Structures are given as structure tokens and as C-alpha cells.
Length: 128
Image 1: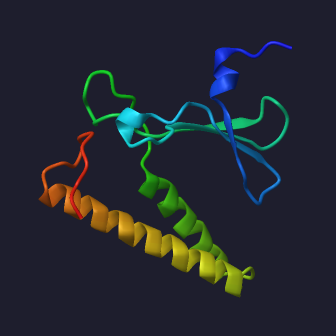
Image 2 (image 1 turned 180 degrees about the horizontal axis):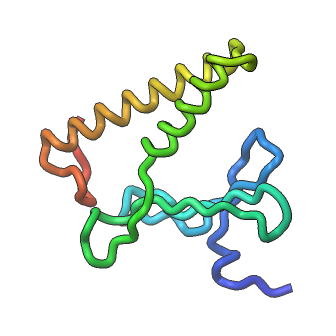
Image 3 (image 1 turned 60 degrees about the vertical axis):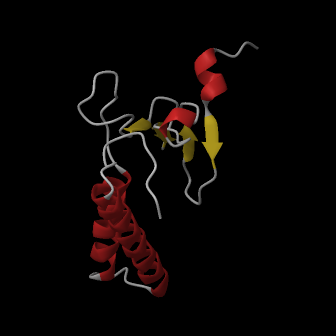
């Protein structure tokens, strides 16, 4: 069996759902050592949702536009708040919701710090 280059870049990500999650690209050491393209297989081989994260500074030639971490966390927060306001409210959902809110707050602090240090939107580290 041969493996093409794209399959070599795939990295399975453990999850607690009846789906398959994978990073579809290598971690990029020039962009924070993060992967930027993910796939979630939720059915048969063709039932895949792709998620493309921003890769590189926004609006700069050579960058790949995409979503941000907070975008996905905002979606999760909305879903969990919906569950908590309906018949599926439970302690576990509340714990997850609190964790998502904490994550969003931390990312907001990171953005504020990057703005104050003039490095938001650049492939540069911030102090702190």
C-alpha cells in the first residue's frame, strides 16, 4: 500500500465523539508551530467537514484566510448556552461552558496584550 504526501501530513486527534478528527497539515514552526487545516469525518468517507484556520497575517499575500480559535469557541459557547437553557441542562454542560468562557477570556487577554505590544496580526511573539 502506498501513502501519498497528503496522508503523511495527517495526524489523528483523539476525541470523545463518534467521529474522526485529524490535522490535515504539518505543524508550521514559522507560524507558532500550529496546524491550520483540520478535518472531521462524521459519516462515510465523503462526509467530512473541513476547518481552515487563518495561516499568516490577515490580508498579506501568501497568507491563507480562515477562522480563528475564538470563532469556534464562540460557536461552542452558543451551543452550550442553548443546552443549558433547555431540557438538556446538566452539570457537565455547565462545566464545559465555564471552560469555554475561561478559554475565550484568556484569548481576549492575549489579543489585548498583542495589540498593546504592536504585534497583533504578525508572526511575532509577545512578552508576558
